Image (cartoon, rainbow, N blue to C red; front, side, top):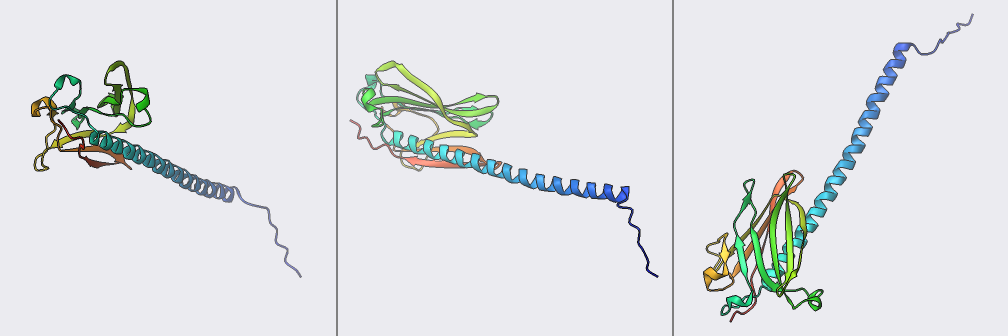
Amino acid sequence: MSVITKNDGFTLLEVLIAVVLLGILTAALYGSYFGVIRARERAAMGMESRRELGVTLDQIRREVASAQLNGTDKKAGLCFIVEDRDIFGAHSSVLTLSTLASPQIREKNTGIIIVTYRIEEKDKKLMLKRQVRDLFIESSAVTYTQMEEIKSFLVECSRDKSQWVKVWDDSMYGNKLPKYVRVTIEIMDQGTPVKFSVLSEPRVIQQ
């Protein structure tokens, strides 16, 4: 005599358990997926910040190296000034210098520009602004954002690398340029503040 097994399907409890397990698995998969997406976005933002940082430091290095100053004629309009300031306790130096215009824009002006770097605060975030104008054309001034979000901007000057100062006014040093200029920018890298520096030496021979 054969035994016939009757199957009435899944019970309500079994269905509920299956749904709960499916929900847990789906949540885990979605969490992992969006975690990877967020990690990729953070990495992309970090790469963009590093790119902006590299461009900015190299640009300042080249401008300082090409700084123009006439030690015998202060009235020429040439200058090299570093001001020591802070915002929210963070270094926010102001750098103003006369320098050679890049070859790409030199045909559009007299060849010498006045460049100013300064920190501005907006919505409790610090941005590095760059203003550039032709030495002899006041109306040519243009200001734009060099870096959208940084932690600090510090400019230091020295004549022999033994002592660094955060303030430099060429009129205080006989209308002379510093021999060394160190620029340090601090940014957030994956939630950690990191500082990057560049050292530049003005190459122009002063009269």
